[in-house]
Length: 420
Image (spheres, rainbow, N blue to C red):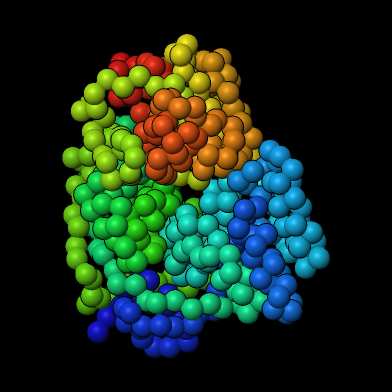
């Protein structure tokens, strides 16, 4: 019996020849990730174990949720992570000024490679499946234990094969692909399963598209999302990853729970209406909805291609006077490139504000909290009730093109309404 990509990575890291769905295994990890919210409790668990870190080069600590610190509590949490990193000589600690949003930063600096197994105390750690790795979120207790032991346990997930065909239409991006999928299967449609993306359409996706799609696998309930390693992958990692890695591919006789087909050429920009990512509608079918805020950024859509798409629509225009628009580059490198290409100037001249890299408003942290009755269009990943502020506010999820168009029009709008 053949194995899927996820099963092959598990088998190699468990030191066995074969694994099957439902099997409990213990695997060595290639990277353990924590942020300024999840690392502090993990550090407490680690200290209780009383062992040194398993490998100072295989732990990544990124203060990105409440940094630059918004209050005393967030400063204390960041301080505990900073002191831990210094005490244990953690190589991959990213201080303010070096940091970015963790799931933008780690692939960017080469900390993720094909075939690797990564755990992170953040649910969107599944982002790294875009590079042909197995990556998933864990709790802080598991993170703390893994920092000491270098391994952790898993139940092998079954897999769903998502077959992509055709070419991407204008203004359609990875965000539209994953929202369309979630709209098809629901927020629990892949619960504790692996989403394996295959087909000729994969070659049409940029690495940014793939990172966005894998990032939101968790919004379908999936354990992970994973892409095959191809020319796009190899080009992306060629200047970033400087260590040996072993990529995997699924066997021809691998077993999948089901197969889902998505024809890319039939897709259109979509919006997920409150209060679930599965509540998906084509943007052209959304009733006129006046908005108060737009957020462009996050670990889902904070990369340079995302800002480029938004800037193409916003440049030379003005943000609607009733809309607050917040642009958040995903890393310092993205920020610098966006400045060099003139995107930041375009955003500011249009009336938007540009933030330092931070998760900020996505989790209702800061830098854009909503009041009761307010509505936001956001390129973030969740629109649960109260996610970005008051429980009586509303978040509409969309890609950068729809978000930018909405900022200009003052309502949910399609990109072609302002780009003609």
